[in-house]
Length: 139
Image (cartoon, rainbow, N blue to C red):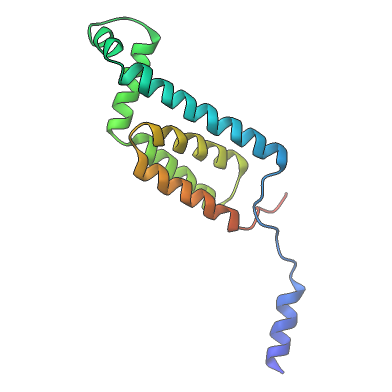
């Protein structure tokens, strides 16, 4: 008799739907991910690893690309992209949100290209787990 009471009470509660972005949101997430991945590849292969660009920037060339190169080199040496992607992915796991998902996706895609592959891959795995979480309640 007790089992039937608990079964009734568990069935009476409506189940919240899982966190699932809409088709339009998925298209925007694809754009954000690919733009972040593409810009990371551009910076890595055209600014950081390119020998003539490295020599010019180390020689004191005052361009935005050299300033960006210096900033990105400081950030990826300290694993900032990976830690940021991991932190935002964990926040998204606790409270799923499309904005947090997009931010974590962009940081993880950038970190995968910028030598922070371990932490960024962990962030991507946590983002995949966030699809199993219930969506936040609407206000």
